[in-house]
Image 1: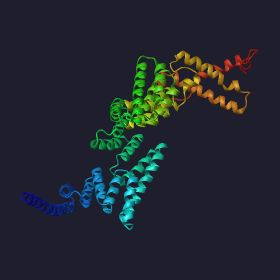
Image 2 (image 1 turned 180 degrees about the vertical axis):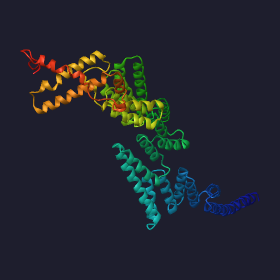
Image 3 (image 1 turned 120 degrees about the horizontal axis):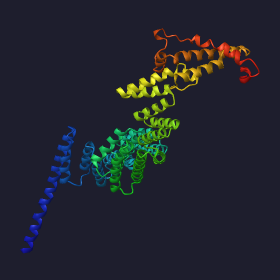
Image 4 (image 1 turned 60 degrees about the vertical axis):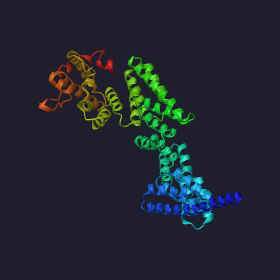
Length: 489
């Protein structure tokens, strides 16, 4: 009796389990249908919840995992979707959609080789499957873009790398590796806001991503925010101590900051030779840091101007604006050097560039001064004609005039060729003209200030009265054994 009762108990316990299993399947199907309805309405979060309920009720059904994988893909959660897709084909290796979704997840995450294997398996099961055929081509295209990008990065053809990564990301939108490579190349191209945007998007999803931290630091470093850049490089190295690029960038940033500061200190102390050496050493640290190097060239140009090496200063400032054509300070420094070397056209050009960028009163005045000097330079240099300094006294001007007039007087060159006589006559007239202007205080003032001398009826000819003494002087100087022509002939 006892044994029979025991057996009955066992029999009674097993029957409800079989019934519960069937009921669970029916309920799981109901959840799946509800999930399908929400999926059709693009309410993927609710679809996900119902597919999860179906899986909980029946965890060995491949299609439930496949459906949830599809939903996760629509939500952009490709890593989770990959896990579900892989589980679906583990449960049923003949599940074509499962292989397609696994391949699609691999491809979206940037693993094109693994994606190819999944699509190949789908084609083995259904060789006419158009989706598998197309996705297989897409995966191969991504592998080709990767290969080209790798070669072009070595060649430093960063624009082409960005192009390749943009094409690859059309098929692999969730690949952080492609995004980071694109961001790094954007930084190398000076497109810092775009690069930072890409890196920031990744850091919002994964704050410990060492590559994204490195790119953020790289952008700051190239924007000459070196101290902040070092902080990001250090953080990247905490996440990945073997991150070679972050290590090199951190070392360069620290060295660049130190050299630049030492150079600035030497300059302030008036030790221009040491400042020049330090700025030169800093320029050799990292040729890719365009903005900082532009400042270093300009600083070295300032040092050269202090050392009166004006041609070298101009060259340094030119290098600065080649690196950064918006660098106002370099234009101003170069313009001043052009003024100091009387290259007024070049000075005007630089001051015009500055004034177009920053329309300040100071810049307007600098441009006006340069234009005035340019205008003056295009007229005859009367001081040069007489061979006197611009600060020469009235007596010095008169003496210089007499000397030059004697030198170029037509009577002195009466025996020369017609060509020489014509040239000397021209010079003689210029000497008279120069004296007429510089010996008259009013005319001299107008000439020195760059005003037009033909205004107010000012006579530009020579003072004829000054020529009256020349015939007698020439007669005295050309007679006897110690004649004028003997002395100068």
